[in-house]
Every structure is written in C-alpha cells, then in structure tokens.
Amino acid sequence: MKAVGRNLVVVGCGKLGAPLVACLASVGHKVIGVDLNKDLVSNLEDGIVTWNEPGLEKLLTSHKENTSFQASYQGAFQEAAATFIIVPTPSVKSGEFSNKYVIDAVTKVGEELSKSLESRHLVVIVSTVMPGSTQGEIKRALYSAAGEVSKFIKLCYSPEFIALGTVIKNMQFPDMILIGEEERDAGDLLEEISLSIAKNTPRVMRLSIPEAEICKIAINSFVTTKISFSNQISEICENTPGTSAKQVLQAIGADSRIGRSYLSAGTGYGGPCFPRDNRAFHKYASTVGVEADLSMATDAINVRQGKRIIRIIEGQLSPGSKILVVGLSYKPDTDVTEESPALAFIESAQKAGFGIDAVDDHVKGPLTDQNIEIFTAKSLARSDYSAAILFVPSVNYSDIPSVLSAETKLVDLWGLWDSSSNHDYIRLGDFFNAK
Image 1 (cartoon, rainbow, N blue to C red):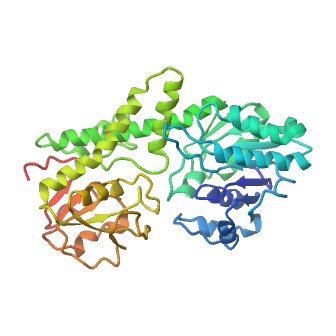
Image 2 (image 1 turned 120 degrees about the vertical axis):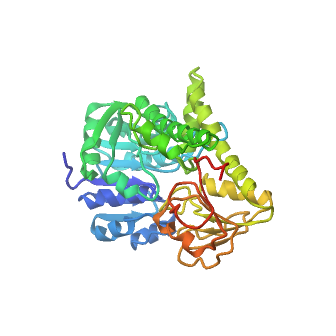
Image 3 (image 1 turned 180 degrees about the vertical axis):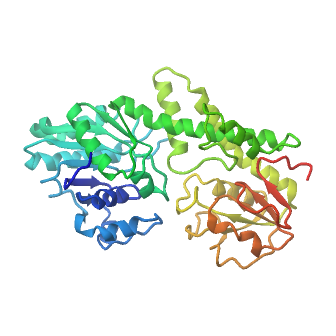
C-alpha cells in the first residue's frame, strides 16, 4: 500500500521532525515543515543539518523539490491531507511528560484549520505523551481552537520507535508501525502514509489511542529491563571466578523465549527516551493503582552502574591518575549527551580526584561544568594516560589502544577492543579480581 503525492505538514522540525519531513518527501509527498526556530528553518531550507544524523542532509537535498520550511503556521494547511505533530514533551519532576508544546502546536493548527478547512483532515500526534493525553487535553485544545470545522478533523496517535544516529534507517525499516485510532478511516489514511515510507514490510498494529499510548512507553520500559538484567548478569560474573557475562548472555539469548536483542554486557542505558519512558511507565501505573516494581528495579540497577565503574577504577588506579574517556554521547553516531553514562562517570571521577580527557567524534564541547579537553579519534596524540575507558562502542574508536602507551590500562565496557594487545585489559562483565 503506497501513497502517492499527498500534501502533508510536519510541525516540529528538530532531530525527529526533520528526518520525518525528509522521509516523506523522498517517496513523493509534498511536505511543509513548520518550526518557530527561524535559524533552524533557514538552515533546513538550504539543506543544512547542524547536528549529526547520518543520511539526513543527503535526503533533504536530494528531494528539495518536495519540501519547504516556514517559521509560522500561516498558510501551511490549506491543501494538506494530514498534519504530524512532533514537538518536545519534556519530563517533569514527577516523571510524567509535559504536553505544553503539543498543546501550543495543536492550538495553532486548529486556529489555522478553522480558517479554510472544508473536508477531512488528519492530525497525528507523534510526540510521546502520557496515556490519556491525546483524547484528553490535546483533543480538547485542538477542537476548541478549530471550532465548527472540528467535525472534519480526525485524530490519531502514532509515535516513532527510533534512536538518534539511526533515525532515517529506523523510519525506513521499522520493526512495526503503531497506530492509535479513534475511527477506522483515519487509521486507514495513516497506515497508507506510514507504509509509503517503509522499505520493508513491517507489521502494522492498530489499537485504540490509549492502548497505543501505553504501548509506546511500555516497549521502552521492557527494553530497559533487558538492559538492566544484562548488567546484573555482568555484575554477577565479575564476582564469579571463571565466568564471562558475554558467554552467559549469549547462551541466555539463544533461548527463543528471550532472544539476543539488547542482551549484552555494557554500560547503563541513557539518552532522551529509555530513562524517561521507563520512569513515565512507572508513574502512569501508579496513577491507576498499580505498583510497577519491575520498572523501579530496572532504574535502580541502571543508576548504580556508574558507581560500579568508579569502584573498578578506584581499585586499579592511584588517586590523581589521568583517565581518557572514549565516547561522550549516549550511543554511537550522535552528539546527544542526555543522560550519558560517560558524563555521569566524569562527574564522579572528578569528584574522586581523577583527571579527565575525552575522545568523541561528534560532541565538540565545552561540556557544562566539566573542564576537560576533547579530542577526535584522529586527533588524539597524547598516550600517557593511566587508563582509557570505552563508553561508546563506535567502530571509529576501535584503534584508540594503538596510540596509547603499553602502561595504559584498558577498561572496555563493550568488548570492542582487541584483548590480545599488550595492555592490562579489563572488560566489564568478566571475572577480573584474579587478574
């Protein structure tokens, strides 16, 4: 089922919205991107992407004839069949998501639609929201602003399952397409548009809107549970002679009931989605009288991973030693450092009196409140570090040990570096106390 030549609007052209514009335009849709950030709009109009997202700039410039960007809502919706809202929903102290920016966006969309809408228009909430939000305050704000034409407006909820650094790939090759719908015909249109982007044949899961809202945060909560379980196995193996977490987890993942995905020893999880979605899942469960104990345990295990790494370092190095942190972002191929395990470690290590330099090919710095020198993998020349710790398993960092002195201890949190080198070598999840 492939859509051809739809007129579409994407509200919010940041790190997720701009890739959505590009993917929609690449299959023949005419797409208007709306964002109130004038500098962002100007750059995107020129095909310039100011953050690292592989493939995005090429896709925008290759399909420029199908895209336009503007810094106001005025005139964007006159011929559009659907509008996708993909603006931030920041977490608040309670763990819930704020709908402020979504409310602002749908209010302005409703006001514009009220001026000219004469036939069906689909509004899709892509931003991750708390269960009950889409048919609650978001729908009320949209319909109130639209007035009489609200009878023509259909509403769906369809969040993306993506990771920064692989957004284009995730949108073009999704595991599934999740659609929360009020009415069948609205879901039909959204399914058509969503499948037009996909280069594979994903399953399309069509649920009620509250079911889809629960599903989004529950999926990420489950993934974080697998990560924390893996790190708990890793902790156990570190304290059990003759064991390796890599070997144990490979065997566990061979069971078809479990699977290999996200089952590997490494650092704790971070980034803009996993930590907050897991906390939001716990918060929502509590509002309906359910204790999400598993989510709480998952978060607690994740938080203690930073202390675990500091414990390893303090057992291996003298106070005041200089450490090279390899990778500052929360994952490869992005400059995003939100809830980065590396930054949490740096803060703790500096408090413990260690000196820090870092390598990252995308994060340029300076980092707030953290006075460190940042090199790229190619520019790193200094070799006299007491230890180098791999936080981000990017292939770009595979050869870092070759420029370090033989006395540098290698702490490989991901199993990327070649353990046959002459360095004193520690891999997270191996029994290392006997080494």
